[in-house]
Every structure is written in structure tokens, then in C-alpha cells.
Length: 74
Image (cartoon, rainbow, N blue to C red; front, top):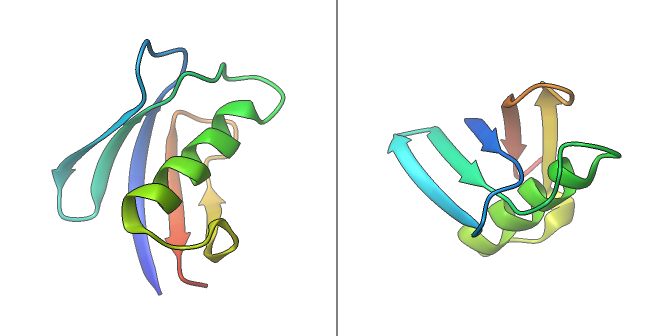
């Protein structure tokens, strides 16, 4: 199980993941920050980046914040 900190940039023109340091990422998603759309896009982006199933990723803290704590693998 791994824990990472992400800063989300919703409404971005392109989707990308930037690694700031080990365990800290900046994630740009096209989805707006409403109706849980950005959170779903973040989970999808992380799953694609780490090549794991979306079901192995959960948001531990920050569901309504731009800064989130993500648990991978559990």
C-alpha cells in the first residue's frame, strides 16, 4: 500500500501528471470540480499512470479540496 499527495488542477486543457517529488504529484484533468467528476478523472489518471486497476485507488482525504491524499493498493 502506497500513499501519495496530489494537487489537482481541474478544467485543464490537457490531462497530464507531473511528479514534483517522491510521493507528491500535480494532476491536470479536463473534468470540472463538480459532481465528483474531477475526483473520478484523478482516479482514472492515477490508474493509467501506475498501470493498476481503478478499484485499487481511493481518496483518503481531501474529496472536496484541490489537495488530496490518495491510497494506492488498498
